[in-house]
Each structure stands twice: as structure tokens, then as C-alpha cells.
Image (cartoon, rainbow, N blue to C red; front, side, top):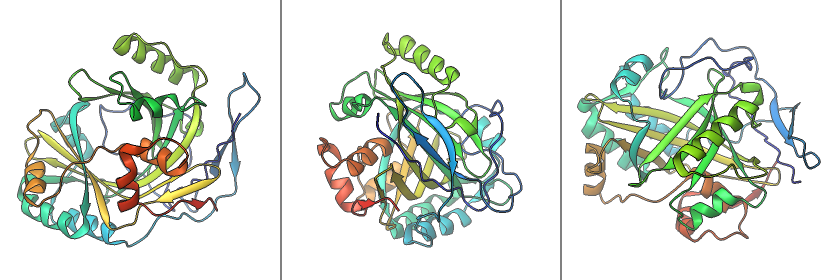
Length: 332
């Protein structure tokens, strides 16, 4: 069995792992922040074990994060967030319940991103928690040794899914999520709380949730051998329309890694996901069209697999990798 080394380091203001993730309000864009502790918790290493035994989780000495700091994309996001009135997490969740939605994704040049938010500033609010408007995310993705879920996306199968834990690194809140593709192409996300200290493991509860979700949505059995495959980290800022009909998540500092290799974005573009409840799109979609920015078909997981495993079929993401990501490099 392969060994997956999750060389992820928490940001300096991350909180220590909690014994279990508490029940959370529906669709939190990011959890409420708590005071930052001194130092950072140890990184995670997931070690493959003999067949029939689950991966083991143990602490390893953390190393400096490789996130690009002060890139054009990060500066553009910070400047744009400062233009917009704030909204709290509870208000945002009450305003925009978008677990079932239509997503459009764009790589937006930093200067164009600032212009777009400037034009929409009067119509948007930005998530603000204790003065923070940008939040750290860590995702651990699970797949079979044969990368069955990745290949289903490459082949554009109708019944495809992704399974991951998502940790909000500013607080330590962790969720296990299953993302499905609906009958009309919409994204459906089902999520349950997950213990942060086991975020690189499929616990009994996570397996039960995955099995139930796949059975109900696709009448599909749980794939055999699901295990941690790779990790992504990034920073996210969330905007929501005043009517609650649309949400923009804006990501920068994206990094993906496994035991052997890693890759990160170039820092020149913001990955914008426009999430709306209908096929018509949002005001942001219309502005981006007018500015000549077209949506792209991109999945963080699939792009990460394609970047970390250049020997695999990856035609849908060749241009994305060439334009927006650095060359593959050995993991430090």
C-alpha cells in the first residue's frame, strides 16, 4: 500500500485539535474564530499499513509552509474585501442556503478581480469573523488505490463523487463532505461533523455517511479500499449578494501535495467560484463575461491529481496546469 505523507502545517494562528467537531450550522463558509495559540500544532503524516488495516495517524515535526505570501492574487483579494460591508457567519448562513447549487469557476487575473468586486461592492457583503476576512482551509481527499473517483471525473461519468475532510484551520472545525453531481449538473454537497485529529482518516461515521449518501443518490456501493490520497491548502474569502441569491468564494495560495511531490498556484490569478441557485448565473458571472473571462471546468482534487501524477490521463486540465500552476517539484 502506498504511503501518503501529509506535510501540512497550520498557520501560526491555528488552534489545537479538538477532540470532536461540534455540530455546525448548515453550510458554514468558515467557522467562528477563536484566540490564536502560541506556535502551531504538529503536521499530520498518514502512513499506509498492511492490507486490511486503516492508515495510522501520527505527528511529525512541522516545516515552514510554502504558501506564497503577498502575491498579486492575495493582495487583490485583501483589497477587494476591504471595499465591501461585512456580514457575520450566522447572518450569511441565514441569507444564503446553497448546498444545492450551480457552480461556475473562473481563474481571474488579480487586476480584473479588483475591478469586478469594485463594480459589485454595493451589492455584496463579505464574511467577517472577529475582524478576519480571509480564512485557511485544508482538505484531505480520499480515493481508491486505483484512483477510481478521479478517473470517473476524467471520463465525465454522470454518477461521480468526491470524498474529503475539510478543516477550517483558523478554528480547527472539521467536516466530512461528499460532493455529488445532480441530474441537471448541479453540485450537491452532503456533510457531517468529523473529529479534527482524525481528519486524514475515514472513521466509522464517515464511512457510514459515504455509504448512505452514495446509496441514496446513485444506488451505488461504497468503493473498496478508500484511503487518503492528497492534501490541498488555500486561503478563502467569501462574498454573498445582499439578496442571498448568489455567493462568491475567492481562493488564493492554493497548494497540493502528497508524499513525493507538490505543486502550487502561480499567485497571479484568483480562483473564483460563483455559486447561484439557478442556471442564469449571478451579476458576477455577467461582469466576468463582459470582461472576457470565461468559466473553466476545474476541480481542485482533479487538478491536484493531474499535477502530482503526470503519468495519468489528464486532458481536461492540461491548459489549467500550464497557465495557472507552477511545475511539479519534489516535496521538501
